[in-house]
Length: 96
Image (tube, rainbow, N blue to C red; front, side, top):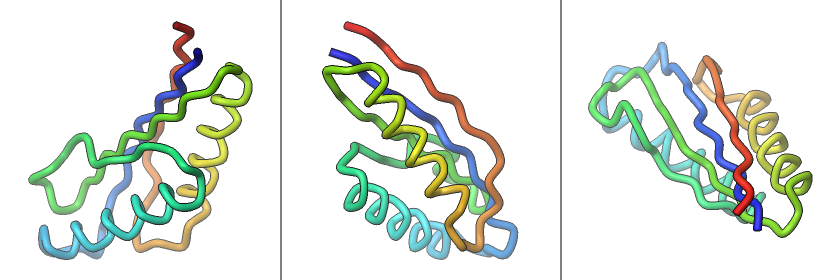
């Protein structure tokens, strides 16, 4: 079993409230979940209204497939036309 894990950091420069941030995060996580069938959640910067950190997890029996799914998620988020600036991401493939 291989587990692909990714942490993605975004900045919302035009956002001015936690309510606005929650709308962006909820929309983004739902689109990622529906499109790629992965687990996704906000994992950091919960009370900071201009920063978003989301975590994505994919499980596969092949490490290359888990890496490919995570890479596609990162490309999707980076290419999304959100009011968000893509800051950074970290990935890790864990073989169990």
